[in-house]
Image (cartoon, rainbow over all chains, first blue to last red):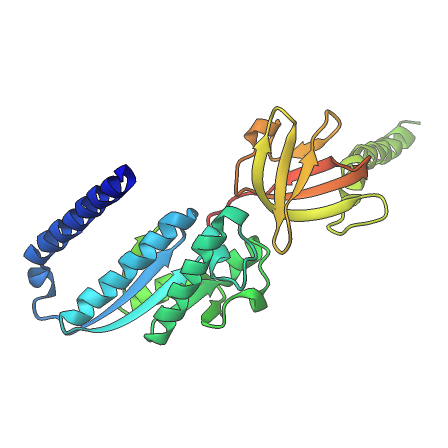
Length: 166
Length: 115
């Protein structure tokens, strides 16, 4: 009985917090920044080491793209992966620690979802080499590029906004 | 006589240089990145550090983690003692199996370049 009461209390608190967060988010917008903008291109520079943080950032990245689309903008997005983050976009449970496997599965799901939505996912070949990851071990949705920094420079020169996620 | 000394001196110096240089080079060559009859090789991520037991656990890219015991004879590269190892660091380990214990011969911590 006591457990049920605690459970209900926690649920009420969680729902209350979520609705408060949603309400406060609805109060704010980015209308001034997006005024007159019809098309946007973004390069997400992802080099995180922490698996849990990477999962949270994937959600944030999705929200960012969705918010722009819901504002009526045409969005071109590229996710450039390098550093330790490279380990999480490979097949199966390889290249990670046992305790990172659950979060790796979530990240793999995000990669598939992003790819289905037309988001380009690029992996730096130099980073792959540094982490001894064979090119064939990356998810099929991932495109390997010679040098992630060169991609970053190139996309920036093309007018992409670079969003660091480190 | 003087001319002979002038001729011999550079040769002697070259000999000394070769003698002292070949030591580390030869030692480096014995650690190939493959398992041999004498020692096993693994590259992976540090998944656990146990300073009390003088052990680190290493998870290879594909496979189960293995415990490696460090003793005073273990050559460490990139770190000077066991407590400098951290989770998720990339390491190369050369070890031998002695009474079911994986004894580290050499552990090399790889540089994190961030790229």
